[in-house]
Image 1 (spheres, rainbow, N blue to C red):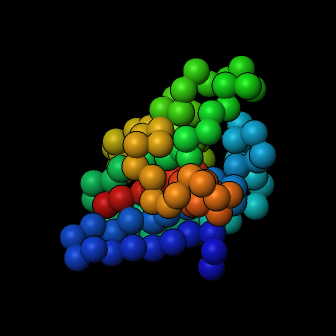
Image 2 (cartoon, rainbow, N blue to C red):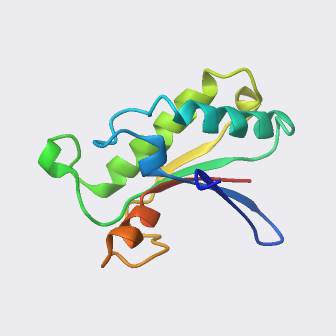
Length: 130
C-alpha cells in the first residue's frame, strides 16, 4: 500500500508514513482514514511492547509560517510526530509499553529533492524506527 513504506537495513525496521496520507491539508489534525493505517501500526507495536521506538517528523523545507502556527519546520515536524504518538496512545495495542523518543527533524533529513512536488511530498513524513 502507498500509506506506509517499510524499510529494513539489517539492523533497524523503519515505517515511513507520508504526511499527505495522515494529516489534513494544513497538517493540523489526522485524517479520519489515517486511523486505519495507525491501527495496523498499533498491531505491529503490540507484538513487541518493550522494544525501543523512535518517532520522528520530517518536513520538506517549505514553511507553514503563513498559517501563523509554526515559527520553523522543526516545530512543525515535531508536532506531526506528536500527533501520531497521541493517536497511537489512544489505541489498544502496545504503545504504552514503549517510551518513544519523539523528535522533529525539520528538513534536515530529506529523502528526495525539494525541487518537485513529488519530492516535497516524500520529505513530509513521519517515521517510526525500532
